[in-house]
Image (tube, rainbow, N blue to C red; front, top):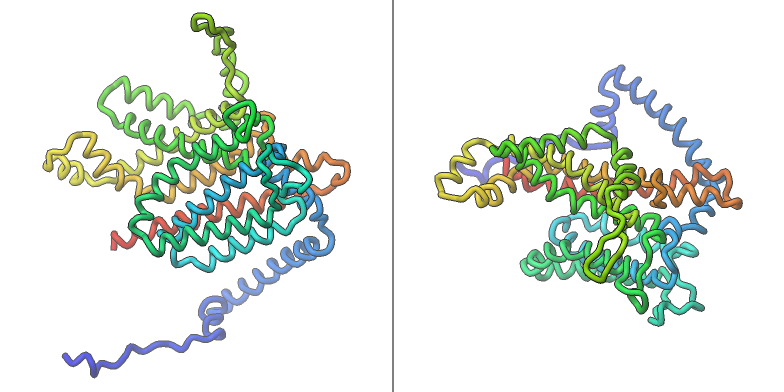
Length: 420
């Protein structure tokens, strides 16, 4: 067959009127529903936009932006938080270049939004009259955000120029990032650049992200182990895993948080003695909250992973046995990678829910993002600004949730392509 003589396929001419007719006004009923929806949407959007532009007192957000970001974290150690942000920007830039290279416009929009944030007065800036722990690092927020954008672009360029080497380094970088960040924020000693900062001073978005990150990192391996234990042939292991999963899933998260804050200290001994050393064991409030969130999330993680394991065809197990693989090799090389890939949307959905559920730590006297919002509302100058504060907090939660959802959709593409 002469392919050069073949005519190109017929295509319909696309226009705005054709698109409207096909999607919104295909029939009389569709047109009526479209008009009704537009009227309802305008009746809601116009008052909200008018209020936001003319009546809202956004000064409550502008003047308290540092509290929303880091709470009462000492101003002289804010550079530690910025170092964590810079490291995150570099790693995210490399990851973006490897996995989201087609989304350049979104990346540029995010960097622009951060730069605009630096123009707000008091946005994590360090007054020029203060010394920073003897380090002499006195930079305004805009300078830090410019550095962050530069490192993000540098990471993207590294991934584009050397993708093979970047793939080898990005995994360990993500694994090491959380411990390094935790050490920077908490400190190591009583004096110096890394002087200890008590967790009672952590707050705002900083505390929310730390609890979320620790909850995700700690609950993931624990949930995988619980899922494997529930499918185990050992009666004791299987019974323990089933009992733990069903018990935790049968109570709300706030109950776990109260138990971690109030009941857990009752099980600790009054004194612990090692020879001449004697001390009273105590667990930090933030650590207890992180432990409660991690244990709660692990139970749901286990059920999600178990659903993925049950969807693996029996032939995969038989093929692994035919190759002479051990039980550990079969599970780590054959079964688990396929099972986790199947449940990526469910896992990301759970991570998003975990991020939003961290707002419950406000009830146990931890000033996370929502807790800081309630504290700001108690300022006499900003009484009656509940709508502005809660709308700003809701926007922050939505932005992070949307980013995680977008990453989830990007991770699903290789799986869907392989299935086709």
